[in-house]
Length: 330
Length: 308
Ligand SMILES: Nc1ncnc2c1ncn2[C@@H]1O[C@H](COP(=O)(O)OP(=O)(O)O)[C@@H](O)[C@H]1O
Ligand code: SF4
Ligand SMILES: [Mg+2]
Image (cartoon, rainbow over all chains, first blue to last red; front, side, top):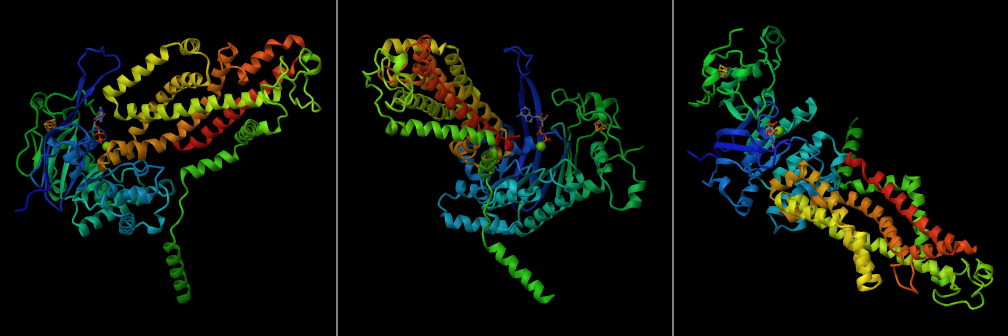
């Protein structure tokens, strides 16, 4: 059996928050943006990460590629723990892991031409490449993602949002990475464009054998793309299972609520289905509820939920709930 | 139909073969700038003043130190502006040609302004971008140093320097250069902090682009707008600083002069009816300041829209 491409073990990211009202010697408040996340991702598989805005999805992605200090382990295919590497040692892995960002236009330098933007990873990781080779490579990858190669001298503001995201994808793919991390790549796009970009990612995954971590705040977006799905809430994993299982039989009340809000294309089912409301606001991540973090909004919360944390994840279908598996009674 | 679709196809191929030229933000800004009437007016003023400073000496009939003995002692009556004796702007109190002196004074004032501003651009940008990009303790240390330097009454220090080391142009440049970069470094640091949070910087970091390259390739080009505007507006400030020092009598040394010194002399003799001695230097002084302010404003309007 092949080794997983990447394996995260108990990854945690904690921010020190200095409030303006604090005195200099007050210890900073701690925000656990990512709290004990683990997963295993086999080559060629796609992991979908879903959760509301602010639940730590971007922070997790940034921790994986060492953009933030994190604790835990992130084991790469060759057995290296990425979190222990020096910046210089990490450089080698940066060409194998590429990222696509949420805001397509903002992730492109407005002063650079598309050609220069896409060539940037090549300049960094293939310094021996001649300018001619680099240009050919850029044109090829532009064509691959559905951009006209003759647009190579244009600037980002001359493109639409969907095209900008294609530029971002081209930049990520030009160094032929093994792992592609997509941080809400379609959230900022129109619905019709979303489908195109997801279609493109699907196609690329199939043709290039990419391994993908796909982040979204909406279950419907990850449904078709993912092999595995992880649901995050306040930096914690609520449920993690294969995509088929999670969509067919969601166990965690949070997943069930999220799933009930996803529109179903069939109007008959759509009319009869029940939407489980998520009451109340998202608690502050600075002061998460004791016991089960979801209990303030959980329709099934019991007394035990207030005191005992529900972080026991077992088996291949992980669920952080004392009453996992029971269906919600209305 | 068949012919049509073939035509379309060949057309599509033709258009896709030629590389399309991009329209950079700079090109956009340039267009906006040249459409701005006030900025163009300012530019015309600056061109006029610069030509005057550069070419004025070839028109002048006198040098800036020669004393015209035919008007000496009767400056109020005979030293007025006149084409016949070659004193286009009249003479100063000693009988020296005011035209030549204004040309020379404009040169000095422009040089002080531009050099002071250039020092600010180079030192302030590097300093501010470094502090802003690396942040943390380095930033703290670097910016506290700037705070401390800014807290020193620099005019006092400058005057002290000029008194101690004697009045010289070099000293003036050094003094002006020492202070001009402080404010610039603050502005650049602030802008760098903003830029650092942008996603494309994060993208570059994720790719593994080394920090110096990120600063050069991603931060600096996006700072140019702010820096240009501030530098343009800094020039008149430097000119004003120099004028003030000259007004105090501590500026450049005779027979060299600057607009500030000329204005000071002109103002001192106004009671004797020699209005031209004040009017001409003041005119060029005002034209220069207006020119820079208008151009700076125009640049700000032209370069800003992207950052909105
Ligand atoms: N650099 C930071 N400093 C302090 N807090 C941060 C920082 N980045 C993110 N956070 C906090 O961490 C939490 C998770 O943020 P994020 O990962 O961006 O969420 P998501 O991507 O899921 O919307 C949020 O509460 C956010 O306020
Ligand atoms: S542990 Fe209790 S509060 Fe938490 S999700 Fe399960 S039922 Fe709800
Ligand atoms: Mg995010």
